[in-house]
Image 1 (cartoon, rainbow, N blue to C red):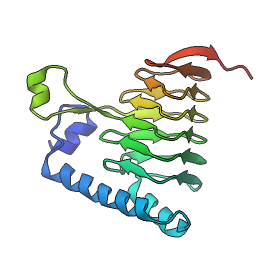
Image 2 (image 1 turned 180 degrees about the horizontal axis):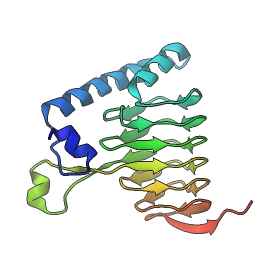
Image 3 (image 1 turned 180 degrees about the vertical axis):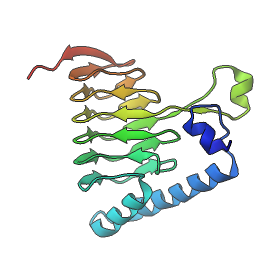
Length: 185
């Protein structure tokens, strides 16, 4: 089994293997090129970001600068928007639904390192997916960790650190992020 296959099965894997190192390097080149483009060069921006991301719908927008590890593990839905300085460490799958709006300086981290020092020092890690369902708003400076699902129609407050699943239809804030109220229509 390859290191890439191990990562997709949530097993310990070595991210420094030749295949994954080459794929990260290719994604970093695309991110660098995307981030150097003039904001007005919309056609080339669309071309590069579509090449980088694994799956997109028709209407979405990614502000510069944008950084990710692989790109192909990121899926974005219709009417998706992510603001400046986004970082998505997509060792695992990161899926965003339709009508997801993400504030500036947000981060999505799928890798997790072993707790015991000898294993961690061996350079291996796990990759856990992140799912953000439809109609979610995430405030600026939020961090979402691997293994988390944020339910539809949820609002995540600015500066939150999301360490566990958030149900649909709630406002959740804090570090660690916790539900503070249900959203009533």
